[in-house]
Image (spheres, rainbow, N blue to C red):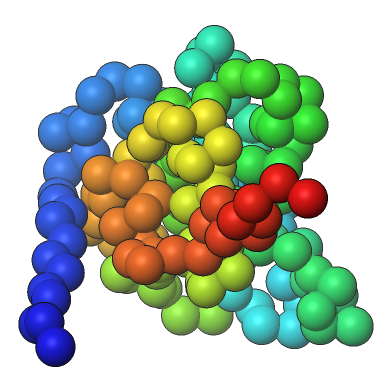
Length: 166
Ligand SMILES: [Zn+2]
């Protein structure tokens, strides 16, 4: 038996001006997108903004439903809209911000499990990694270098391929 170890690298910042100008703008758009959240059940609002390699930005917010699994997270709303409009253009960066109207959520929140799988496949699909910038009601930002950082040993589409031609 071999012992293996996985390490991840990420950045923390308390100053948004440390980000590249286009990433500052992306986080601003994610925070603006919070206004479109429909979160009557959790009260937890999430906004997301995806920038594609062609410069187009798509926003999303969490959309909850009384049938809970029918709802969708902000990052998937934004990513699917971007992929639907430009199916051949890779993602360049993603920003996500959270807000709790009842009590400030100062720390950034990280994406849920299913979103991690979707983001990871967005990298696999185009063979291009993209940074994920996370923010909350406070000034702290958490910056991940790529989606695969969020989901080590992920399930890949390759697993679905047959081993030999039929
Ligand atoms: Zn999610």
